[in-house]
Length: 253
Image (tube, rainbow, N blue to C red):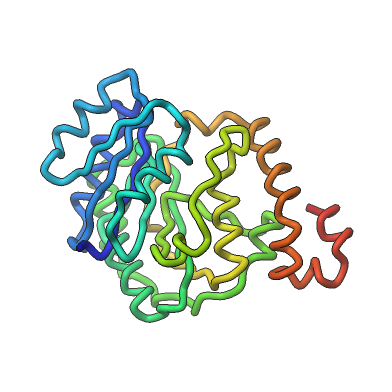
C-alpha cells in the first residue's frame, strides 16, 4: 500500500487539472497513489485525467459538491496519510517529501499544513526556482491551535493539508451538506479540537485564484455561521477563551 493518498476532486476542471496532476507526478517523494473524483463534469476533465491513466484512480460521480467527492475518494484511499489538492491548484516538487518528514519527526501531529503562494499562472520554471531554495527547519512542534482556527486568526488552505488516515477515521469525513460551503474549515476544527496541528513555514503549494468557489463570498459567510452554531461542544472542550467566557467567545466570533 502507498504511504500517501493524494485526493483531487474535479468539476469542469479540464483547463487546469493537467497542471495539477503534473505537479503530483513531479513530486520527489514517490510512495503515493492519486485518487481523482470527477464530480459530474460536463467538459473534457475525463479526457485530461485519462492522459495519466497509469498513475490515477479515476472515479466519476453525479454532481454532489466537493465534500461529497472528497469523501468518496477517502473511501477508496489506502494510504496512511491523506493529502488534498484542488484541481485548479499545484504543488511544489518537494511538498510531499517535506510533509512526510514532519510526520516522521512529530508522529503525534493530527493535521499538517504549510504556507502557500498565490499566482494565476505559475510557470514550471518559477516553481522549480522556488523549490531549490534551501528549506527551513521542520518548524515548531505541533500545537493546539483550535482557538485561533475558530476565531479566524489562522487559516488552513486545503491544498497544503496532509493528515493521518486514522485521524479521519476517528473524526469522520467532510460534512456533505452543500449549504455548509466551508466543509474544509468544519473538518479542520473537528481535528484541531482533539489533535495538535503542525505548520511548515515554507511555501509548498500554489493557489491559482478564480476557481468555482473563489467568488461565492455570501455563501461562505452563511456556511461559517452554520459551523459556528454547531461548534459549541468543540469550543467547550478545546478553547480556553470559551471556557473563561463562553458567551463573549461566541459573540466575538
